[in-house]
Length: 479
Figure (tube, one colour):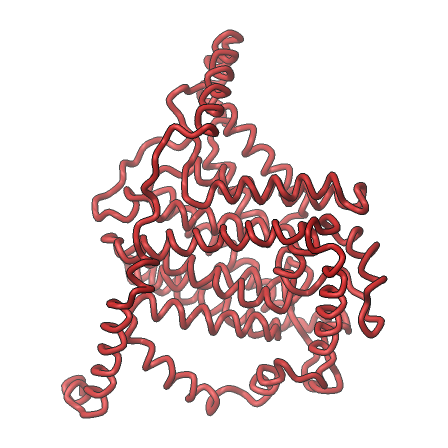
């Protein structure tokens, strides 16, 4: 049967078409420039010298107080453990409890630097933009139109953004990276499984989540531990591609079966969220994953997209194709909010109004379009601009550009298959997340925002030269 397929004219035609596309892309100027290694850079920056001075002072203080001996073997020096605990528990516990764990991570990191003069803070092409983004949010919190209302959200954002630096500094080896990936998937299965259970038990959510006029047959949207179906979809968008990467890289049959089952449970939960933005993001993430794995999948992807129209249930197709339909209450509501937010930015485009719903609710009603009320702009990029002005948006865009430039370059050079597929999973998950961000403020749930910044860190970790090499990284002790 296999010989018949491989020798058929249709298969040969598809193979030739896919091969031509692959060759043209590989020779293109854009690909050559974008995939160039961006990690080479000189040292000795002002920031580096300042950090080195502070590190030396902290180390001397610890030596003077003999804290280095007192804390030897302490659990507070296990930064990798604390960072992993944060990411596993983030979707399961309240936001402020997650913040507490993040602060413990920072204490652990500082403790290690105080006890060990040889340690250095993680360095990557995106880190300068991470620091700048956190700084901008801190400044915009202080200058907010509602300082007290912005304080909580602003400080949460700063802490969760900087967590990505702590995670980069905590992970040293491929083994630690694999451990983190498998624990993220396990947490994803728990969250998704609870969502599926909600559907089985018939747990109902808010009536505002359903448009009864257009979709009267849809009565349940699952939300699991994240309180909202769209937020659950945003979380699953990041985790599902990781599970798919394990399907291809697991060394045992049982490992592949587990990863396949985990992927199935999470995809089922994604379907039950009825989140059109989530579905669109997942389709996009799947397409990116397949194309980065092998560019010849472009042709097969087009065929699969056409075939999906014939096999998907009518209720799913109806909801999916309603994207952009202004007769849909959800779509028209978002459009009204976007128009109001743009009107507001005409006056606050440079410095923004400050982070959080309190600041947004103080100013937005003055510009509301069609009297639409909202907690946020229902678009990540609009909301960042509303909160921090055009400078915050530009820094965020530059951060994303450097992230994709670095990770795509690492994919093109990776000799380690497992690391390469992990990188592809991170890239596709974040791209799917960013696509859904066109229709929702995906940082509204701070726990999901934390997972996003952790994935930015994971992409930088996997892009390190010792990670993408075929040789096994040194399995040193965790920071």
